[in-house]
Image (cartoon, rainbow, N blue to C red; front, side, top):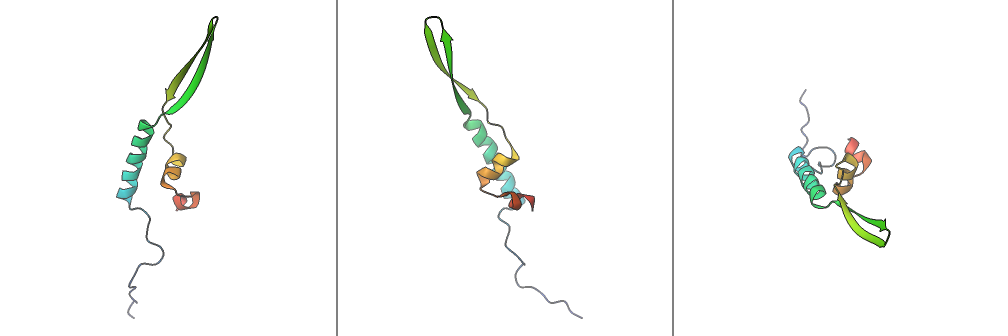
Length: 78
């Protein structure tokens, strides 16, 4: 008995190949480094106060990467 050949793969094509996903992750890491979080701080002194801005690095996380890609939880789990 001969197996039937499919002309096209079943289901939706993948959104990213593994190489594209790795490249997007390196872009996300670079974006995190280039865009730190800004925190405005006010320091009180006897004669007044001073406003300063502190820059904190962004945390690199899976959730942040998924949001950056625009993907849902279910897409990532598959």
